[in-house]
Image 1: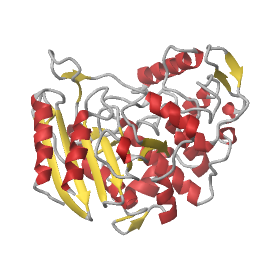
Image 2: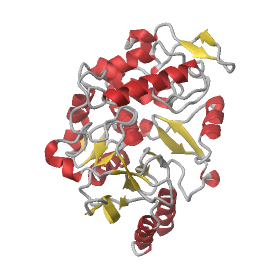
Image 3: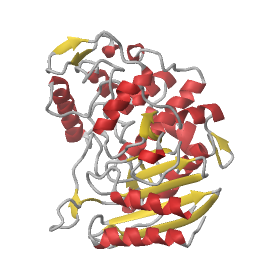
Image 4: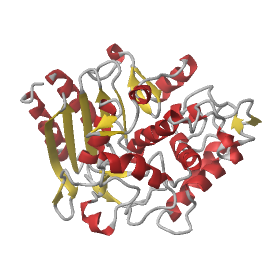
Length: 394
């Protein structure tokens, strides 16, 4: 790898901070079993001039999903779950599900949600909206989560999933693709199947063995000064403005263990901690002497695709991801020639609402983690630029 060429990553981060596209960010790259570089720019806390650093703790939001996927794979390889199982065998409230047709009429579903639907986002569970009754009711539930995220009377992981069982889906399970609450329900399934609280399962089976000491559903008092602030940088005239609201049931302050442990959005981590997770995936289930998954299970997690009908829905709703399919709560590159970035077939990963980004490429022994805390970001221009720089350095 041409490490001199990677210096352009610093230019990208500096430029993003200077233009107030973001308040601060960091990036870590491993390739061929070695750290190839760490870069940071800007502030984790602009008001107090705290720079973004390796030890900065960030809210992962949807980068929690790959971790939930691996947790499910742990149960899969031990025969504790089967992807063809119907969801109601774990969450009985899903026994009589309904869906909204294209005209918004609520109908009984002819098919149950399978666990594979949760892993592939083909369950029909959305993130809410105003388009139909189901979306409106999900929005109401999320608003309640946001309101109570810092309170002891908030619903817990299984209670939230159970309430979703009474909400009309967006479509008949398996018939389409919709980005939504599937990973959160999978978190509840993991609790039921393992007999453990979701956070305890992750800590025992993944975080402790991998040495991910700063990854959790909350940030304890002694680490709070390392938690990055969140910024809304959408208005170029105003620049980056401090954002303090709860989102998707995730407390902005993250000061206490939450009752609702979101498998889709709830974790916080550092760039080094999350890189350990990526290196485990890169190592086909093993990192630092700890084997988390069997090689076959790890290969399964990093592969897969949607069927034709599901892929069409994915392409329509995710136009920024041409060339990718989706499986096991992550994007998977299938056609690099269609991609908007230089890429490699088989590369997989995901990003988060605040702009965090991860990717794993086994063909090139490559893992990348990008951290930022910018509202409504997802896959950012910064991530695309950095990805292009990295691939042209190989």
